[in-house]
Amino acid sequence: MSEQQHPDLVVGEDGLARPTWAAGDPLLRAYYDTEWGMPVRDEQGLFERLSLEAFQSGLSWVTILRKRTAFRAAFAGFEPDRVAAYDVGDVERLMGDAGIVRNRRKIEATITNARATVLLRERGGLAELIWSFQPSATPEPRSYADLQSQSPESVALSKALKREGYAHVGPTTMFALMEAVGIIDTHLLGSHRRGTSGVWPAAPLD
Image (tube, rainbow, N blue to C red; front, side, top):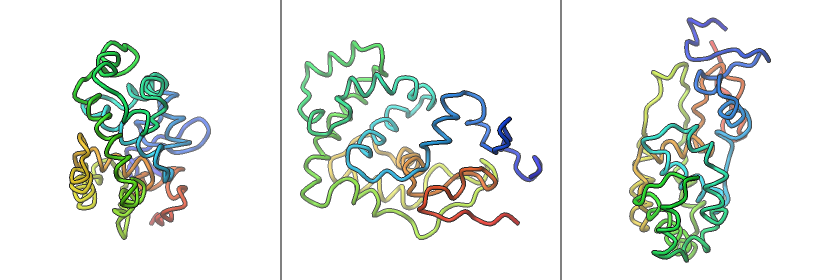
């Protein structure tokens, strides 16, 4: 594999190719190697990812990863029923929690989304809704330049979630969610993780 063909991949000391964003920081590398792009199909897991992607908006993902343990403690392990019961006092408590991102709008959106998730169970549930927007084909990027920040499916998912009462679920945030939970495979061609999710086959290299 030549760097000219794959300018955004780095081959590590273990001989495995990763995108530049996942090649340096050990936390990002572990997340990339074990979690990013793997299927998440349960309500609680998807609620957590949906929440964290919303908090990440405008920030680096590594910032969210470093605070993930604190986020889980602050939001009751992202159990929708428990978060749905949060009140104004909980919002103020969370605004005083230095372990998380203290953004009132995002905190309130997380509580709003927990309540929407509980209500959505009557119509199939969060997992069914999110995965219903899996496209018929997945991107086959060789470099970052080949990737877009949203897609027709992420736009449609954003609109569907908003209709169900969700907040802070814009199409760019939903595209990032779809990447993170395996609905699409945006691992760069040549990455050791390409095609490992079981959802999409690895694209052939020419």
